[in-house]
Length: 177
Image (cartoon, rainbow, N blue to C red; front, side, top):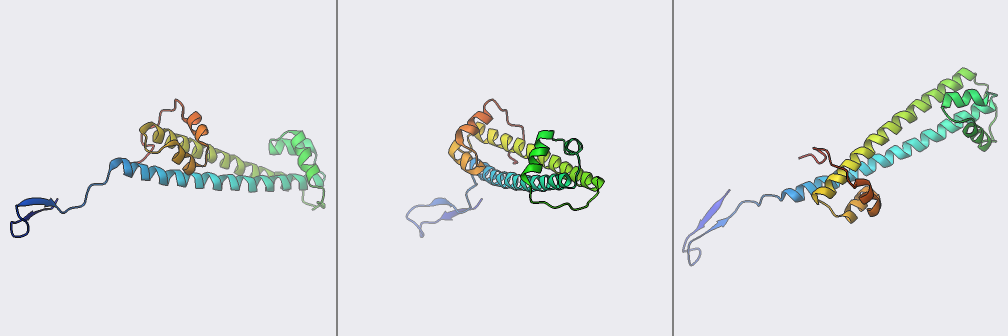
């Protein structure tokens, strides 16, 4: 902390003037951290959703190709952990395929791999949405940002945020110090 003493030559009477920098407001720092975390969360959730769509398309193409190559619907439904109706629907939606000659075991391995990747993405989506919920609840409870700014930063509607965070107790460390 710097204090400067101004003498009578500089001014009419002696006084002290603070020449340091003001300490930043803790609430403003927390609000800025919250903004950054919400932006990052929105970007990660969006990337996750895009990845899931791409994997779902690849899984559907693999299922359709396996059906085209003559695999049974029941066996594909078990491998993909889908209903037989869903497998038939995927097969009917891809009528422009030609047989590839790929063995059934190779189709099943590819479907199993794609399915496990989808499960991993689903688990990460749940974790990301849980962190976002905790962050939104902390920001609302502590009054760091208003509902409209939270809605803009999170990509959710204001009423949805209010319903989601109703009664949610934010965990400690939701917004890092």
